[in-house]
Figure (cartoon, one colour):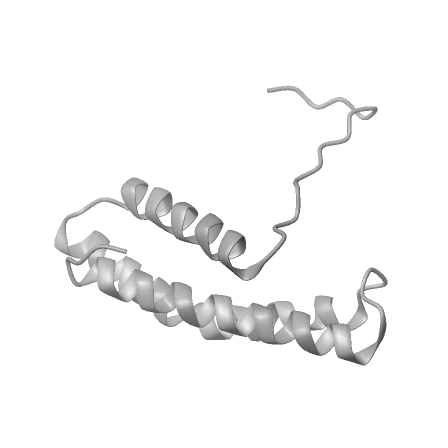
Length: 102
């Protein structure tokens, strides 16, 4: 990989909740696979899962001031989507930490 100032990388937004959920389920599975499977790794993963709600709060200011969002209604929907997604990820991660699958 190299850095080139003139290159721009974009990532397509997901068109609906199902597509967004699918993306994050896949990413959660990939991250868990790189985490390790011993007891300590599962404990770390479980603790990371419990931090998911706090991470939503940490990212909330970015949503509230984003110039890409138009009006209070759009900001509210974005905030609710963030919280919903982080809580869902927390559930997936806790299941993985306990030995289950997502």
